[in-house]
Image 1 (cartoon, rainbow, N blue to C red):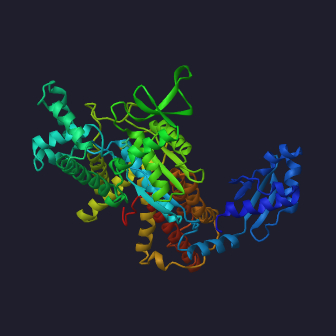
Image 2 (cartoon, rainbow, N blue to C red):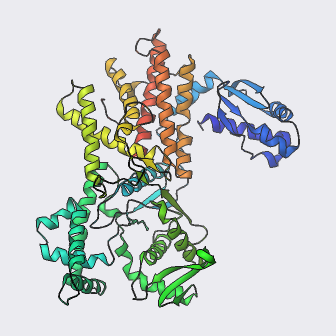
Length: 581
Ligand code: ARG
């Protein structure tokens, strides 16, 4: 085990057990980095109450039983009862050496769980908006992280590829022609296609052969499995897939066509879902619709809120599909843990679906389901991000603008690089900046989309972290050396060297925590702090011009390790690491 906080936690815990009895041996000793020592244990304050003793007495008892001589060079009680812990230099050296030899960089390989992750999930013939961008980016990072932790991640792209709008979309496709430029819009500007269909639909009168009437008949034909209608529908989905895949390729996310499991996949299960719910007495007919009334879900004046599984016209809805989906994930995919990376406004929907599924016995207690709530992305006006005309922002245009803006910066900073290389870096930096902006704040909070801030080379941004690793590469290039070959022992001389080494030792624990808590922003924060310790390190510790050969080798090894951690960490976020910047 590498993480100093974990090592110290264990030691303090056994001291607690020895001092106060085994029931205290699992108390969290709250180990934090400290400005007075490397770390500080804060257990005594919380325990004092529980034990009815003074904090100082508690920490004295901890001290008496604490056995850390192999790990710490100094242990002191400070303040009202903190225990300050200073690690031994040789312990840090030895642990960083072990990290250097560890392919996994201290990241534990956890017991393998099957984890379907529902993310991205855009809708056919509609623009992917910035909200979809965020679930795509956050979901992809969780998929990468959980996979790296050893889990069997099953990506599930629950695209919206079914429902009543398809009647009008199919009729429109038929009118413009399947191979027409208008149909081609689906692959470049799907909203334009949707809007054209919508406009026709709204403008057409009630007449038998009018567009609206035909669209309605088309829905019936689609649901009835009419072959020609299904063929047209498949065409629509195919064209939309082209668009999704363009966005995914530009973003560099891991989703492929194999991960598509759209709403339509579950059509054949919906009737049975309804019948089963009715047979189990979970759903009943209310005002013509089949509804489940679940305990704890009430609206105004305590009126029960129904989960509608079959509308009065016989149609199924979003909830019915999600009930079928959870059955599939539990029964067929054999999920241990299911994640839904979806916008926060859908929280109630998932709560109700899961409650119904639990009641029906489809979702056993042993399977954990989590809604990883995605907060809104706002424009500078504090409202949901839109273009000036009020239309939803075209995701592709947004990404292109990020790349363009990054290109301007790269041209200015690196005029020496050939144009192609500048363009490649601009793509990595522009996309990295957008993705990192999504990942550096808690996934459930709102944030303001701001190109200038996300592309800044200072502060907690993608480009800052990309620069931190590019700078290490450039030191090696300058010295005519390769980072892979730096394998000296790491000596802990300067304070800044020690701080950097300790940060590196924390990596594995942070990644494990991201997997447990499903919070990629913790990894971002960690990487940002790591980059800051690097900056402080350079300030005090010259590398290529170090005083002695041994010091130079040691420092080169330390930053080579930092490079690996930065690149690995960025990769878990889905952010690329340019060679030059
Ligand atoms: N397509 C939906 C939307 O755009 C998201 C689907 C999320 N996943 C799910 N299983 N309901 O809002």
